Amino acid sequence: MIKKIFKILAPIERKRLYIIFGVMFFSAIIEVAGIASILPFLSLITNPDLIQDNRFLKYFYENMNFQNVDRYLIFIGVVVLIILIVSNALVFLTQWGLARFSWMRNHSISLRLLRKYIHQPYKFFLNQNTSLLGKNILSEVQLVVKGIIVPILEIFSRGIVAIFIIAMLVIVEPVLVLALIFVLGGAYALTYRLIKTRLNIRGEKRFQANAQRYKAVNEAFGDIKQVKLMGFEKFFLKRFSKPSSEFAQHNASAQIIGRIPRYIIEIIAFGGIIVVVLYFLATGKGLEEFLPIIGLYAFSTYRLLPALQSIFAGTATMRFNLKSLNALYEDIYSFKDDKDINISEIKKMDPIPFTNELILENITFSYPESKKPILKDLNIKINANTSVAFAGSTGAGKTTIANIILGLLKPDTGRIFVDRTEVNDKNLSSWQQNLGYIPQDIYLQDDTVIHNITFGIPDDKIDMSSVIEAAKIANIHDFVMEQLPSKYDTIVGEKGVRLSGGQKQRIGIARAVYHDPGVLVLDEATSALDGVTEKEVFKAIENIAKSKTLIIIAHRLTTIKDCDVIYVLDNGIIVGKGKYEELIKKNNKFRKIAQAR
Image (cartoon, rainbow, N blue to C red; front, side, top):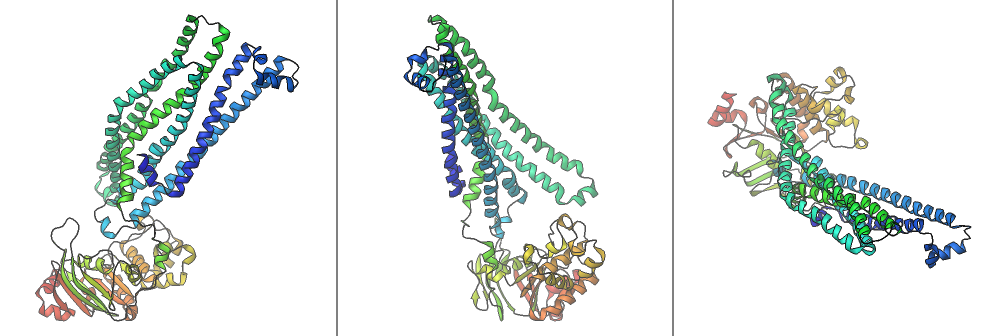
């Protein structure tokens, strides 16, 4: 567990952790010194003659010119009080440093995990539920910090205090203290042995319940319009209720289990004071002999019990949250190392020159866990500054081709060439600088129109004239200026809920055009537009298409009538190629598609 924690932490974070360990060690020494000072002080109160018997006390008494013993005792009492104040102040500062370190680790580990996820290839997300990835980043990291990292530090801190206090007590009265250690330590050890398996099981169940909670919430709000329309509120409430209840119950159980020994041990410990008194009475010692010991024992127990309880509770909490640590560790270290990846550097790369042709050579592709390839030995040539469309029935492989051209999917076999330059892992980002992508479903942030068009661009890098130009091309500028209350600064709502489907689609088109790409890939991009708007958008795109390459995944065949080349796909194989009128006359598959639509 500790090895995994140290591997999750960055090198500089490990150094800070060592510093915290050092501060904790020093703080523990000061804390124990404060406790230890109680014994001589109480001894002096009950027997002032010790001043003359102890050479150090006698030296200070004589050289500091105290007028009487009472004033000297007051001075010593003030010194002891100052030690206790400094001790507690140092403990407070240590706890403050611990809290800051732990919460900053919540930030850094979450950021590191998000970085790991977001740099994974597109293929990774095909088999992932993004709500569960979000759960790991926002919930499980916090549980690992609060449930493992913080307890480790607490155990180290309280452990040092406990060891020093016990060592001090052993020196003063070894037989009695060793007996009490055996009783207290044995009670904690036996309790932990009995509960650790239950903690493992409940920790596993809590992890699963937390995953179901996030998934249920994500699904409930994912299509809230449909939920409201069909009256499915109770269904989703019920779906969330069960895992939420289980999550709460498992956390409550773990918390209670961690506190089980406290009340029993307190009875044993403070009852032990009576045993100590009886022990000294039985040995025939007077009050002045054992009162300082009783005071020291009582004060030590007051400090020792919370330390032992923290160690036990921390160990139980770590056991309970072990599943979360294992999951994060696996996700962070099962992916390739991305330490050299820098997003800003990627965006500054120069695009691969594309002036002649894009060639897909012998492309075959299968989705994960699919035995049948979706594309089979495809050979496609796309000339620069032309419009090329892909048509076919659902599942023919049209969108897969688009994703391979975009570099989101890597073919199982085959190669891609741009002007005789093969696209590979090293220059993929350079190729993607040429591309603008317009999908069927446009994702909009809960932000302004400007920020949705300039998606991912910092405010200081936004070119407003390019925003307006892109909006005009997408036929959305007039709507923004005439109908939106704050024009380009209007908030569109989550997923663009305040806009119509066509308006969202046109903002998506403006987003792609804003970057002035050399290649526009339209994946059924106009399917949500009405006929008039669709014609206007394509007319605008055609006006700039003379200097760009259009790759269109066709939904409505009317939108690809004027394309230079149309490829017809059937079950991942090209079964036709040519212009629209030529294919209508000679290609049965294309003719059936056209008639069906």
